Amino acid sequence: MPTVFKQAVNTDIGTTPVDVLQIPLGVRATVIGCNLANTTDYDAIVVDVYIIDENSTQAFYVKGAVIPPHSSLKLITQGEKLILPESAGIRIVSDTSDSLDSTISYVEIS
Image 1 (spheres, rainbow, N blue to C red):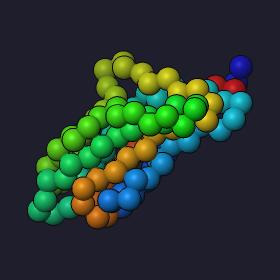
Image 2: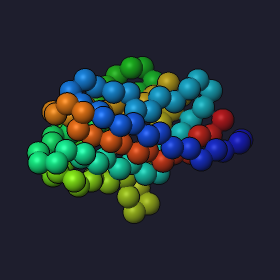
Image 3: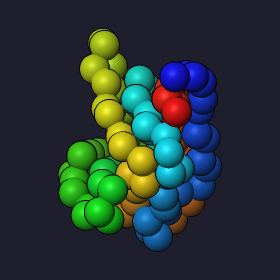
Image 4: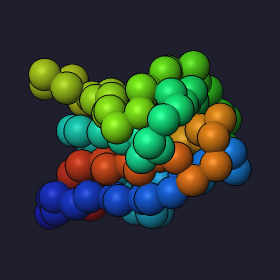
């Protein structure tokens, strides 16, 4: 089974939900890092992170996380891992337009 280390970088996430990671068919993934950065100068933002499973069911992974301006939040740290099967993914939305950057590190297993 080949494994490939990858990253998904998304910028200017706002009030419209963004699918920041989508696992292709025939592939599984292990998320080993997830960082969310507030890019605003003055406003704290509120962020929701959803996991979308292989049946398109959406569930909160993080609900209502507050990130101060010029700060970041590490969602997956200290050896924690998030396993995603094929067709699963991660969706993120902020309460403020163009306010959030996300970086996700993951391993694809095919």
